[in-house]
Length: 231
Image (cartoon, rainbow, N blue to C red; front, side):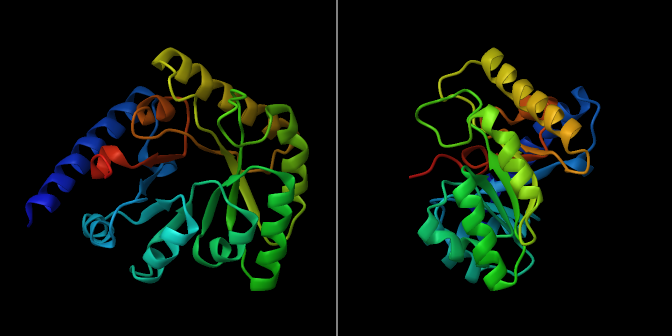
């Protein structure tokens, strides 16, 4: 085992301990949680090292970087698109990613539906909510989420399974927890209106996934805490 693989293994073991501790605090088990290894700006060899550790969910935030990795990686990997999706990149995203976490407008949702119909595919999608109304982030205004979700649930070629959010960059733990709790409350409110909707939450990254798990997140998107700081 190379030194790089050993350090990756050590970080993954440490992460699993932190995940287990957060799940224990929240009285949850692993069955409802998906660990997405965010491999953006990581070379293909590192993806394959992570795969060898048993990781099967990977996330990319740029189509042009992600697609070559998808094509060159084992077929049993589940790929998640987690970045801002430009409309001219929708077809490639639909063809190569099983999940799209970042549907941030009704027009993008409609574009994904149209392309998915043409490609005879049905990606799982999440609506990205700009819950903190952060001017630096994409996403739906919280009050605009319900009509977009209603539209999504009427479509045939996308499966809208939940909400995604990113807290403000400089927020402390108290504000991050309030953000995640607010996202969970919005989800609960929407589930009252749409009880058949799965209502999954994609919350939590390297610096705050423990808090996200405690607040009920189903997908955590972990990059630097697993792979180390990017170049």
